[in-house]
Amino acid sequence: MQKRVVPFVFCFGVLAFQMNAASIPITFTPLSGLTGGSPAETAVYRADLSTTGLASILSIAIADNSFGLGGASGQFSGFDLDAVKLSTTLCTTASCAASLPGMAVFNFSAAGTVFAPGAQRAPADPKLFGTDATGNKVDNAVATLGLFDGNSTTAIQGAFGFVSLGDGGSLAFNLTSAVSPSSLYLYIGEVGDNGEVAAGRVTVSDVPATGAPEPASFLLIGSALVLARIFAPATRQTLRRFRQGGTK
Ligand SMILES: [Ca+2]
Ligand SMILES: [Ca+2]
Image (cartoon, rainbow, N blue to C red):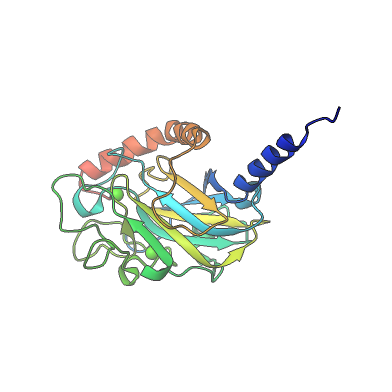
């Protein structure tokens, strides 16, 4: 009598196919020091993408998950993204990351980004800071997402060099060409150093982004909770500073 192995082979094949397109949550290490414009209060975080297990990376997605954890209200609600860079250079300081040229694989125009604005904390403004007239696209003339140059202030005039995602907002980048994650580092800058990266979720994928990122995996929720605990004291300190008229 013949053994029926075909269904098992078929099942394995389906699993292998589903694992082809993957969205991998990544964790970050905070770099020492701050960088940015004036005031310069951009905290920079580094992720080692060689651990993702992907053969190539075509998109990166950043989602705010702070929901009032820290920072300002209105147009400055949520994660304030100063810049995002990819590089094979290992930096341990914020100023080092700021000086990196970065790989030329980002298109920060509307054609290369997928933005889903989050909610504003009251009192609401017409649109989030660093977005275009519709409020539904990033205005890179203001956000300058290739440069760690954010002015850490909520003053108009004065605020410049970042985009605020809003509470629960997300921003995905479709790279202009696939990159190998081998020996590759992702650097992300958060204006105001409020711990909003710790409370957010960042994923990389081997397929282009078409909409809002997938829901966070349990792995990332766990790592975000650990990071939130680590950063909670700093966040409280920054909140106090903000209440005293400081940063986002
Ligand atoms: Ca903010
Ligand atoms: Ca910037």
